[in-house]
Image (cartoon, rainbow, N blue to C red):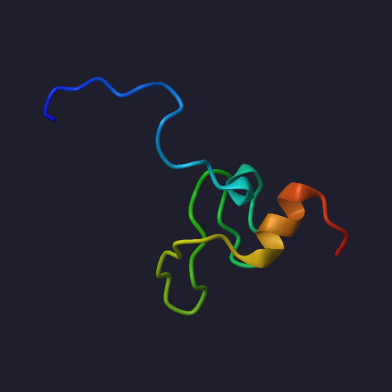
Length: 58
């Protein structure tokens, strides 16, 4: 399937937590969360970042 055009909107859904900065690890908007102790990138945003993006009360 080389050279096939990708359809718009097909693929991974954007993570809701990436629309705000992370209050836990201080990752900026659009960047993945990291582990503060060693800087390793996480596959999913921190729960506090998701709460901040969805407007959940802290």
